[in-house]
Image (tube, rainbow, N blue to C red; front, side, top):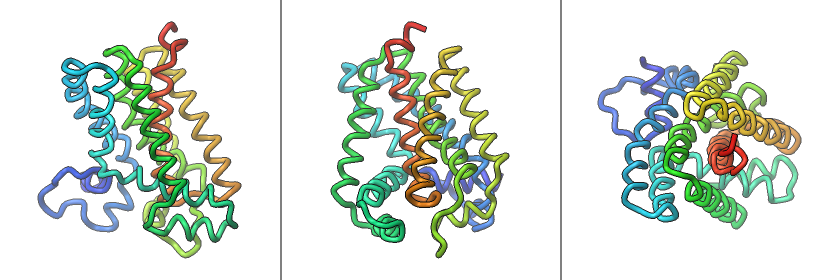
Length: 249
């Protein structure tokens, strides 16, 4: 229970009274609970998304839905995406890329990455019928938090001097990564039926390509790239659900 509360505190801005889950050991052991927190975010978002879809045109409803999804985490993963884009697209040596990613100031590439991501998410959600949109809203947060476990399982930590991600990597486990992948696959099938297999396969394939890219450029993962992986997985789910061919499957 302490681990779940620690994951909830770290991944969301939900107010949690008391001191449960505030110890560093609780946070280090919380990674297996990330998919459960993602599912909780999805379950909490679906009723609000249903209301937005019922009251607003699809193109307009997509905007508050996206706002709600990233508001749950306080923009934590969007910040990681922006820092990752600034570093990876700086065309600098590995050490300088890592230094740029540690800089709290956002650069041009970070802004561009955020704009593209949010526009693609909004366009994808706006293109869906209500049933498919609600399924996507449920699954997107699950995919994002499971992606963190998968990326930690396949990539070493890239910062020799340490960082926030070091705490989670002390409990790194391939089994935890497998748990994240299986949980995502199961939720995909439950949310979308047989078509969920295609959604999960597409998302995991993109994550694998991203992992190979990070391994080549940075030598592994950082806290920022894990946040970027979360956002990338959410986008993959949205794109897959909006695909016309998938809708006919």
